[in-house]
Amino acid sequence: MLEELALPYRVVSYDLPKGENLKPELLALNRVGRLPVIVDHDVDGEPLPVYGSAAILQYLAEKSGRFMPTNVRERAKVIEWMGIISSDLSPAYSGQFVFNVVAKEKQPWAIAFYDRLCARLIKVMDDQLASTTHLAGAQYSIADILAYPVAAVSMQRFPGTLDGYPNIARWASTIAVRPAVQRGLSVPS
Ligand SMILES: N[C@@H](CCC(=O)N[C@@H](CS)C(=O)NCC(=O)O)C(=O)O
Image (cartoon, rainbow, N blue to C red):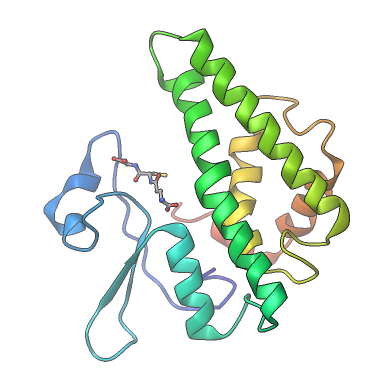
């Protein structure tokens, strides 16, 4: 989003396995102690921290007037898809990652639970993209910006996951070529 808006920014990295995200300096910006957080220094003279992918995207869309439609119906669908990605799809993929990859003792029921949930939600997304160019409608919006990393990373964790979902593949290929997306994916390296 920062690249799409061509906003100047400085990246601060935190090593999660080392627990750096629980340092007082980060908790002062966001009591949840998770990433991402932005600090906007261009508000009213006081730094403004905003935590969470969806909140950051909505904040920047409102501030810039971009990537969020003004039409009531189109706007409602962007908000709805922001919710689906944040509250349904991303937690499902987090669960899949934790139980398939992170867990030392594998629990087949938990693996099956999250694999099934991911498969169910990926089908919902593919069905949606069968009838719309972008996730929430015709326009590229913050719903696409939120969803694309899940498609580019989490959905490709296991080979073949996207086989049989041509609409997600078509949608992802149009987003992957956006120069801002390519620049954004190379951050912070
Ligand atoms: N609701 C948040 C979730 C953020 C999240 O899961 N952050 C993870 C890294 S991707 C994190 O900071 N984990 C460290 C921890 O929980 O201690 C969002 O959508 O941005």
